[in-house]
Length: 111
Image (cartoon, rainbow, N blue to C red):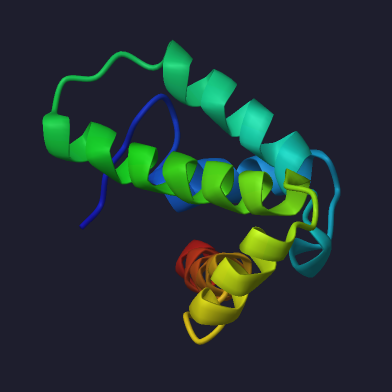
């Protein structure tokens, strides 16, 4: 599905442009920096379609989830929770894979 919003072709395009603007390696993304910039851009957009807004908000929620996990101090209860959740995929790694894949397709489409 192709979505054009404020010059961006979907949420991954916006996120990738923010990463490239700061000249950050995708695998070394500082989620706190990028999350704030992404949320600022999303809040400035005018939404005409609920499905379109949902795609951007899903990425925003993923960024916030990753940021919160990184900011929480180590705690015994949190460690137990983390051990229980450890089997779940790492959302940061999943996001990086999606961004790398998106960049590859975007760059191929430009040729």
